[in-house]
Image (cartoon, rainbow, N blue to C red; front, side):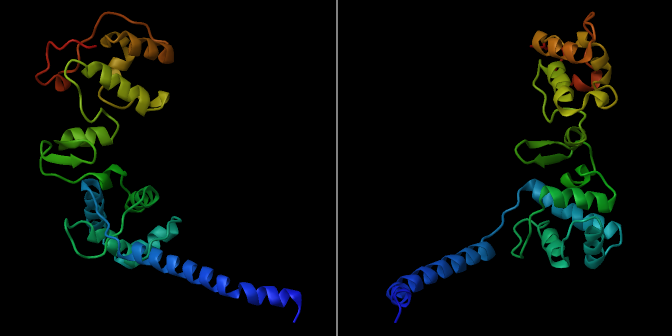
Length: 230
């Protein structure tokens, strides 16, 4: 017996133990991954319901949707799509699958809708309550305006003008700020902003000058008249 063979034989029991441990860890990990329960929040359930709704509206089978997604470079099997749709039912005991951001965008592309159309529910009224993950319940109109980049999700009484302009400043590219959102007129007249810090920032970014104060548009005052910005 060579020296190398002798060393191998001497260490063989240890190699067996290490191999067995690795195998056990792998099996345990697989069990955790396959048996762990996935919990969806409100937005996750809205996405699941909207995938189901839009697939039906487009007249697409699970197979057709899977093939369409494959065609845009995002592979999702029929089973995966079915598990996504299972999440529409709160408290379901069926297997469900989360939608990640790449799935979401690809689904929006295939359905021909905005990503917002997947994130929020279709309600009968603009004042119907909508649950936003991390933001609580808000009227549907405010949720949709927020999702479409028109306004912050919530406005602080007395700071509406500042928050609306900050929202456009941080949410939109410069070339879009004066075209989209309810405060596009205010963006052209920085005097509507009383917070000197934000006003100076906007003035530096846009090169606009400050004139006399301009009132906040009526639709955004809603009982906050008289509130002083800043």
